[in-house]
Image (cartoon, rainbow, N blue to C red; front, side, top):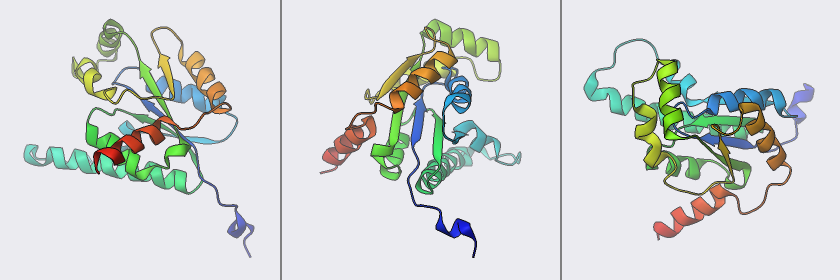
Length: 194
């Protein structure tokens, strides 16, 4: 008999980094993987978009293809956490349905929602330096990405290095409080649907 048949059941913790493109999420995620004491998987949404074949998508189908990609990504994250894996999510909640979908799939007490942001001028500078994103993408996402307004923790990447942000998140994990941001947001979502 395989000894792995007896792996104890548990739920994984999800560190959910939410911010615009170029806000510093991936840099923080990289530092978290080096800093955290337990194994974590970094699951950036960009990696899921990169998995798609290079076949051209007709313009009239692009929105549907992207929507299904996001939905699949959310379910992959939820599946990894449900199997007991700790996950660092690198996400852009630039559409309300994305937050609602995540709220319906993830165990809210097992999510640490982190606001990742920096000043508008710094976002614009980073976007120019990257050169791989359409100009104005990050600033265009600003209003919706943080519209829900509820977080467990905040990281200003214009004021703190990715390493400092990762350390702050790690320190927060041992002192998490309830209700979590996801618990509060899910409660608000359920009240709205009554």
